[in-house]
Amino acid sequence: MRAIAPDLVFAEVGNAFLVEHRAGGMPASEVAASLERLVRIPVAVVSTKELVRDAAAIASARRLSLYDACYVALAEANDAVLVTADRKLAGACARSELLI
Image (cartoon, one colour):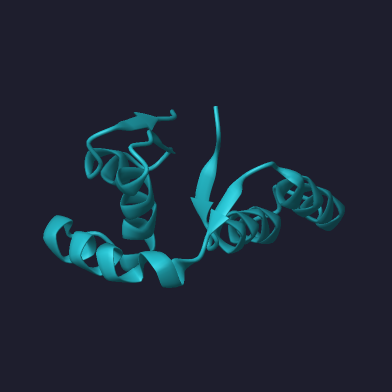
């Protein structure tokens, strides 16, 4: 199985680590270690520049943010399963797996 993601995935996941840190749930040292592990995940990265046109149409039609629509556009263009913990995002993609 091959993993693909829009390049913004690193900023979004990194931001989640920072939010957790600011809430007191993750020490700064763990944020740094988690970011190191994140950038080492073997994932093919696609530029949002390549996705933005299709993502804008998807965002408009399915009432998603452009950020979220990038994931849907990428999944659909590659006939891939979108894996997410976001129920709304999972519901917007024909092939999705909701993590609970």
